[in-house]
Length: 331
Ligand code: SF4
Ligand code: MG
Image (cartoon, rainbow, N blue to C red; front, side, top):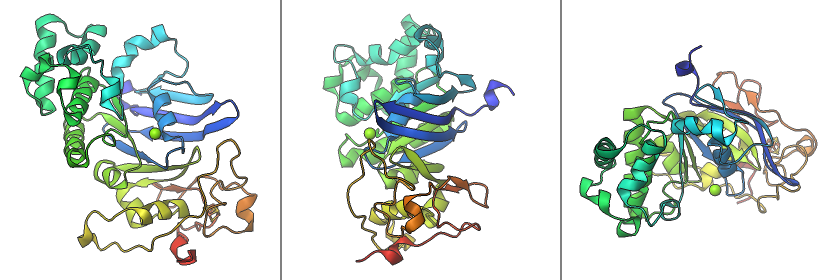
C-alpha cells in the first residue's frame, strides 16, 4: 500500500512507564486520513502522555507509533527531523509555547525554514495567507505574542502547526486555557480548517461538548487504558461502558432540544493511583455495577457486533447490549 492510504496515526499496544507508574498501559488507537478522533478521560488518565508520544515528544516504553505509514517509534532525532513536517502538536497554553522574543511572522515561518519549504518573500507570503486563514490580519505578522489576546495567540499556534501541511495534528486541550467566550470560535476555526485541509487530528480533551462537536470517533481512557471506542453519535446515544456512562451523565447537555435526559451517575472515590492500579477491571473500585469477577478478571477490549465499537466491560453482552450504571447508583 502507498503511504497515502496509511492512517495518519497508528499507535499499537503502547505503554509508557515512569518508574513504577504505568501512565499508559496497552493503548491501540488509529486516526484515519482526514479523521478527527477525540481522546477523553479525567486528568491523570494518561491521555496527554499518549498525545506526547504520538508526536514523539516522549518515547513509549513499549509498543509502536506509525505516522502516515512510517514507523517513528525509535527513529533518532536526526532521522526524525525531516519527518517532523508531517505532524504537529497544538498545546493547551499558547502563552508558554510561543517564544515571546519572536514576531508572529517568525513563529509561523520557522517550520517553513526548518524544512526548507520556503524562505524570504515566499515565506512572508505564506505567513500572511496562513494568518488570514486563521482569522487574523496580515499586519499582525510583525507583532509579538504578548501584543495579542489569548485566543489570537492560539490562532497563531494553529497557523504554525498547519504551515507545513501536516498529515496529523495532535491538539491537547487547545481551548481550555482560553476564555469561555472565545473557546467556541477557536473550535469552529479548527473544525473549518480540518474540513478544508483534511489532516488527521487527535483531539485530547476533557470537554465532552467540544469533542461531540469536533470528533468523528471517540476513545475513552481510564487509568492508562482505553475502555471504550465508538463513532461519536453512537457513543453519546448509547454509551456502553459504565465509566463512559458516568462521564456523559456529568456533562451538561449542550442542546436541550436533543432531549437527552440522563440520571446523574455519581462515582465514589478518587481516580486510583496508576502506581497501584486496581486488579481485574481497573474501574471496579468506583463502578456502581461491579460484581465479584470484576475484581479479579481483566475485561478485554472487545469489538462489538457492529464492528465499529469496542468496550472493555464484563457486563456488556455478546450482542452489544450495555448495562445501565444509572440504575445501580444510589441517588
Ligand atoms: Fe464495572 Fe465490572 Fe464492567 Fe468494570 S467490568 S466496568 S467493574 S461492571
Ligand atoms: Mg492533560
